[in-house]
Length: 356
Length: 269
Image (tube, rainbow over all chains, first blue to last red; front, side):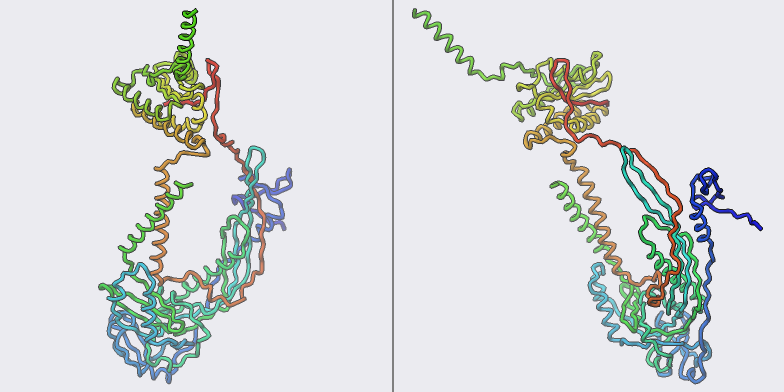
């Protein structure tokens, strides 16, 4: 009936024994003593369950009627497939600027579940670029004058939206430090704790870029979209704009979604641990339930501009107007600023020291 | 009767004249400021050092005597006793308390010692003496004896200047400014500040970045902590002995063989 249970020492991991002299549990390897209750709690709390990150797969397929108004274009250069409305005169690929050719009617493939229509027009996009260039000290002066906007394209970028309920079991090791002086000695007491946080949290519509051609840095930086603007998909919304077909499957996008969800869960639960000098996560188990994946088209304005032979790509959230992109730095200005700040602060620090 | 009156008048006049002669000549003073027993300096070096030191003494109105003594052995005496005696038994010091300081360098035991007397005790605290000694010892170790003594004279000059002008000597709480180290510290702060500013400005230019988490997508109010336990495991207590800090400054004194009070300190080189 009795099973041999081995208890592990929380301090060094060795097999701990009951010490009859002190009536406590004592580790023969590191000599640390524990109350029996504490050890029991520790052992229970250390049972772990493991991760489980599953998702239900998405949605519906294109119906024949809807598909009839859509044309598929294929880009010779980057090989992607762009879907556009009958009425759209699509001539160039929004990503690499090469000419695209209409290859035929849209057949098969998944139909988007939802779409956020464009709220911002082309003019606004152009103005947004000018605004973005303002107030950036290290931007070379000539950029504003010399850059040429190649083209501004409104594209519906395919996204996978992940919903889920997550259960988390997280263990931390924490310490509290207390210090006091007695006589000629300074005493420092370090108390070690095992912190348990179990709980649940729900995520809604975590977006992952389903287009290989759309750089993830741009697509993630223009987040968040306001999902209250989501409507059921209708091909009418595509008129005048291009829509990219997804080429990264939901399966492949999963790991990115999992990564972001995991990071957020860790962050949120970590915020509930307060009052310790150090906190180190020891084990994080996350289980996802009711996972749902949806396919959505979200509006993005893509701008490419050329400056000194280099192409700079910008993206603007077609609903909120958030503008992102990387700009070149004028290294001359950089070092000039560096030298002047260094000189000014050095002189100031010297004067302060001389006066004190 | 007339002759007696004449002699009395002569005596009175002589006495009056004698009394008006300035009093510092009453105390014998020793004008030999550099006593190079160990032969570390050439004759010309010795002469120029002497006049250098005399200038400093004159600059401070003969308030302090400054002497340099070198020897090959301290005749069995401790460096402190030897230095004290050099000063006492050779009539150094211009004022009534014999104020001044003496640097003794013993090549035999490789000791240096600075002995202070009178106002010198107050102008040169233990801290000051150890600082002067350290910089002089640096020159001595290098074999640059002239440099060592010149440094000694310069430092003595500046410490006396500080004490006379402000009434406070350089001490632990009132350290002389080391412009070299101040500059290095200022420069470091300047470089760090500049780096921070510039990197921030550069970061402004790069906004296309991946997002770490999904905080925005958390359904409001959906976070629930179902089990929250903080379990105490064990504790460690360590202790360290607290070093008693070296005193708050001042000058320690002792009595020399002649009975007078001296301050000072020494070291090896």
